[in-house]
Image 1 (tube, helix red, strand yellow):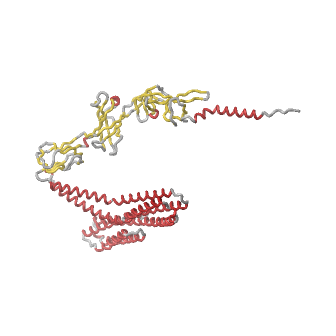
Image 2 (tube, one colour; image 1 turned 180 degrees about the vertical axis):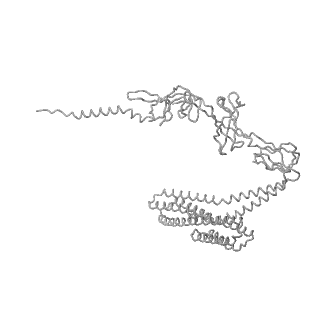
Image 3 (cartoon, one colour; image 1 turned 90 degrees about the vertical axis):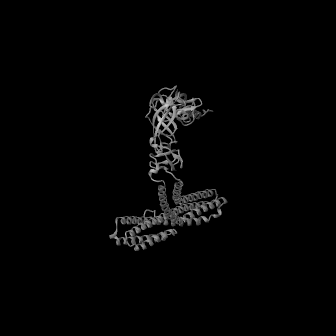
Length: 577
């Protein structure tokens, strides 16, 4: 019987595959391992120049103080200044003479109260806008809270879709209502300006002896236009009525212009031109092109309301899904919406109040002028006054009302910014050695003004540390005041160094400053790179580079950044490129 040899072919094939895989892993092991190593960016050590910066903080001091002296022995009737007050050249400092200063003080107090009332009235005129914005913010926050509460529900998708549609419609409606409110307020104000211009024209016509009876219809039409806007309910009809009244008034003015054409003086021509401009502006605010008129806002509001009504109807169909938390959020949104609507409804009242505020401001301005005239008459002429020859800030006042100042007595001192300001701070002697008077400096941390210039004026011994420190003194100018704190940066003179590296390469720990240097080692599969710690000492730095000493050579590569934390001896891979 013949014996067949066993089939060993599969053994041979398996051995070949095993050897092939082993060979591939051997050749690509370096690449695979490198992919797991921290990737580092490097820079080489080079020689370069460094211009270091010296920084310090000091207090601004005034260089000049002006002394106010009495030119003769006189009694001080009233003191018109106080310490810390800013004054201008020509301002009255003291009133001289005999007598009681109570009347002057009363006049000063009256003037102060009138100016305060004027400021408060002016501020109150803009308070409506602030309240409206605050109410809108509350409403927006309530809408967001309602949406967040709804997101927690495990309701059906139809409810969530309906809520999203309603929220969008609410936002559109709120925006449209706000646009209408602001547009209507602007339109009312423009009609007010038109009426004011008309009154100016009518008054000027009367002053020139012209018959103004024909202008009565114009005045009635303008007042009717304002009433139509003030009573507006957001309808296009109310805007159309106002436009019709304004156009009717404009035709009346044009007809009157033809009637008095032979009597029009330059003054009347100016008044008439201003009135025509107001007519044009008012109509533009009401029905002008560009999508920003009152009529555009009316149409936008109506479209938004219709969209909101549809979304609200659909939304109400899912009310059974509301939770207690969501109902609370809805209640807050309703309250915020009601508060916002209440403010918007008061827009007409605001328009009327704005007009009344304008009249009040005019009256207060007139009273302030009269009170100033009375104060001027009480303080006497220039012979009984001591005025300032300079502008500045009152540093001190040495006399009081009722005392007698002797000739050449210093009765006040004034800091004069025009005489300049200085700032000084202490630095090491080594830092000061590279600086020279006249060097320009940079103010790096001052926010009161738009620009400040600083120049190194002197380098002096520091009285507190005369052996190790110097005092740098700078002249400063610009938007600065005495007592302010300034941080100043100034560049030392440039110096060349053998070992210069980027600032990003320098690291530090409890043992001092150091860098990681790339150390290459050859292997059968190519070069491998390792991080080696080298301690360094920083000699000088600028904003980008530092000069150092240490166990480094020109051309060495130092690590600037790494993709993962490293330590001395770790193997790394170089960044590509």
